[in-house]
Image (tube, rainbow, N blue to C red):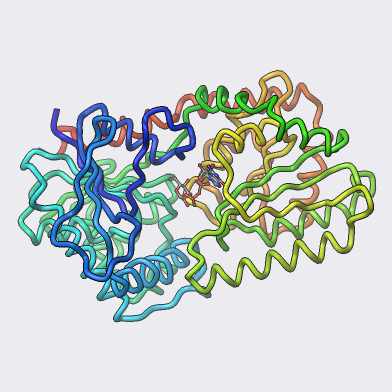
Length: 460
Ligand code: GDG
């Protein structure tokens, strides 16, 4: 079997028996161990002078090749075009997106530079699997550098529809570059269709067979590969801390109150402000719930050097302060807004201890928290998932979750109210339905399907 080379913006080494690692890292790591391979990308460090060659090291039979970025590269490629232009636009926030030619030039330059650094390590029959929006033109740069290996790409975030994508000035160049990949993978059918429609209309792509587009002289395969979790592992993890002092203290402090739980990177795409407002609406609409329900929002800061992220943090602090100021009494604080990172085992136990998983992004590629919440529930008394219809996960979990539109404050408040009184029989039925989908589309299947398609003979 050919060796696998994974390329992603950040490399996240996973140590053996490290239960704190998240979904993507675990999935990719599993694949690298199976076929032997290397994980290549940015080390996470900003350095004065980037080295000539990546640092190579081995951990648990997986090879890592990482390299630092200069301040200018970081500013233009990562903070600028990737997170100031692509991230907001691909999440339909064109109002928050900015475009700067210098940043775009930096984005292309770093992609080409990464290819140059990877090339000496590559073998002719290596299979390359490239991840996410930071690296849309990576394959084109590979082709220009004479690398003919098979290269697949998976987009973790949504792919926007044509009118939205066109607000990114070099949209055509970017999507043409994407066609240098052999296989393009998306989270949902909607994303895949958005790409294919764009390619047909703007690039003159011609569908040749289901999932195959001819673009000029190239043929590119496109497909949907919803990322998943490992439900059994999460079940186990969620029980590890169930009797820990922290969880017992939490339960004791709740005094039989119901618990609503949310966990998100602090990001404007996650709909946190709207979620806080809907929780307040519940308190306004249903006096019976006042003093009887607590909402914990864990939101570790992310990308805090991007201005928009500082803004969302300020907005949330003010919303939480205002709501708590209005409703808190001597014995009850409605919202606990926590700005720090928790250990993964603790998170899974918190999911298990809560009656509602409140996951309401304005737009999300998939949203693993929704899947983790479901997997962490006790089968005999499961909690309810309240899920945004704009999360990729809604495509799979729509039958079991209570789907909401995050722009509809009253609707979200109603769904919370319904979830709080849902009979156990209905909760069990919904949970079983969702567990079936989680098992069908688990993390191993995501990875295996993608790699099987990338290795397949259809390209010959
Ligand atoms: C992108 C796409 C897509 C969060 N806080 C803590 C913590 N987490 C973990 C969660 C979950 C992961 O981080 C977040 O994954 P999401 O899928 O929810 O969201 P993004 O970070 O935006 O991920 C998304 C994903 O890629 C995969 O393709 O689903 O749509 O945007 O696993 O549990 N983990 C720990 N402490 C925390 O405080 N340990």
